[in-house]
Amino acid sequence: MPLQRLIIQNVRNIANIDITPSSEFNIIAGENGAGKTSLLEAISLLIHSRSFRTKNFRRVISDGSENAVVFGKLTGRHTNMDIGIDRGRDGLVRLKVNGEVQNSSARVASEFPLQVINSESFKVLEGQSKVRRKLFDWLVFHVKHEFRNIWLDYCSALKNRNALLKQEELNLSLLEPWDRQINSSAELIRQFRNECFLELQREFEHLLSEQTELSGDFSAVKLTYRHGWDLDKGILSEQLVENYHRDRSLGYTSIGPHRSEFKITVDKKGPAQDVLSRGQQKTLITAFYIAQLKALKSMISIDDIALLIDDLPAELDEKNLKKLCTWLQEINCQSFISCILPGPVETSIRESCDSDNCEIKVFHVKHGKLNVEQ
Image (cartoon, rainbow, N blue to C red; front, top):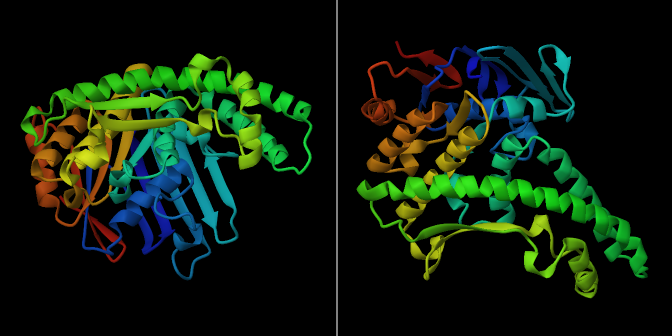
């Protein structure tokens, strides 16, 4: 279901705008500080109930306003979805779908898979393992809808086990029920992640094999994944017992799915961030995001997915920009791309299109107000 209509009120410097996006390419152009990223941020708020820029939501609400409000209409072949979210300075989140109050954003997020590429995305290779784990789990969440609840069950058991490990006196038998729950949830998480990883790995390596026209040899680049415990040493609950003294001294559980890791490496040379140039790393990360979207479409029946790309020309050179536009068209992705000057992006899109029917809308933002290029 593509986003057919978007209304934004009191999001940073955007007071009130109402737009009808293209189902293919949307270019959001304007000077720095004009409100380009705020528009993308509003879409993230609508779908995920949170900003991709800050954890302090009060910064998202316009000065002098008490609430940030976003409304969107998703239109599909068989159903429509009206979404409205109101986030206030009081900390309350009010989310409705077709008039029904929602307790979380899970329903909206599952119907409208949305991913974000911004300057922080290109630091993922250097970041902590939990950042890459969260990025990978985006795919698992959309492919395996049971994953969310199982992960929450696992985290609850893990929290209780860690609390016991911190006690001054502890009877080992008190850990047994939490070890069992951790083990049962972990096995399902392992299966879900493994299935998704194999498809992601296939798509990622296939994309890189096509990169002959781009700078760099990517034939030695590999995507690897570790589950967070040694599968050759038996079931996780047994390993938790074996690791008891170590975990007790640490004060937390040192093995399990929460310790999983995926890495991008260059064969026999080490981590990609230590071997490849900055430009090659950006190519790699872009390919990873596209591989995620392609893996998602290959694993489940879904018509539309969306991608927010903030300040694209600042991150990618001309060749990489054209290649990304080609990939976006191939996977039928509704894209929202912010930039200062729309010309280079629009040219790259049109050169990558298979026909003259490529639908592009250009929106010019200035001081939080928007005009549509005719």
